[in-house]
Image 1 (cartoon, rainbow, N blue to C red):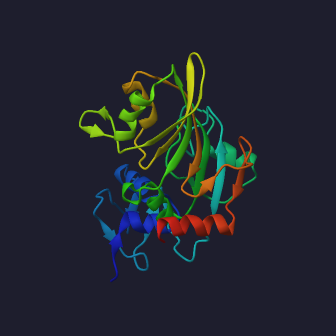
Image 2: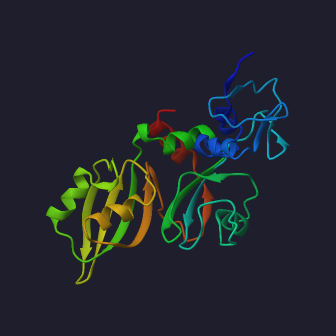
Image 3: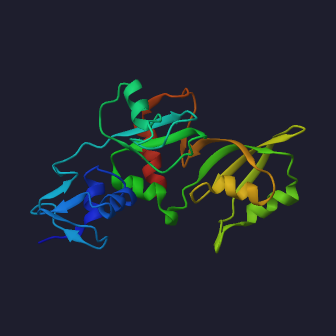
Length: 245
């Protein structure tokens, strides 16, 4: 019997990224042959085992892969559902008349806007989010005050944002400075939760706005706020080449 890790099977089936699949397992929402499987090291055979998520049988027969780029507005949750009833990515998909099942890759804060990748390709999603790929993400960031080049060098070298956690070196370019605020272009190769906010709070220049403008070779270009469109074949090929798929 050819077994493999359960979260990898779920990702390949387009249920979610591997990280999200692990969360589904930990929540007790995945069963194999009628038994709940919550151990992350558990393995299964996708050809012979009956694998269910939320009671629905997994279908592995050539699931078509879909890839979209979205311009997430502010005040939209980067999730497919929200118990508090706030707007989510699902609302964006509906407004753009997209009916296929896809999920957001990574996070973008509720009060941030910009580029978001949506897909049902769990393997690609895993590579986009995995720290080892060092896939660049570019942001336009508005901060309070006017940080000097010397102060920004702290972020360029890496700063402590939580106990025992130091960020990897980042690129920071000053785009525009006003009396009480500065627009910066920030390039990261990692994606810790609230990382940008924590980095700039650490150097005494709190963030006022974040907009993601690029993920690897993908760019917002002419995409409008709230709009979702399929990736072109060229964009997808460039992304896979960057990820070495």
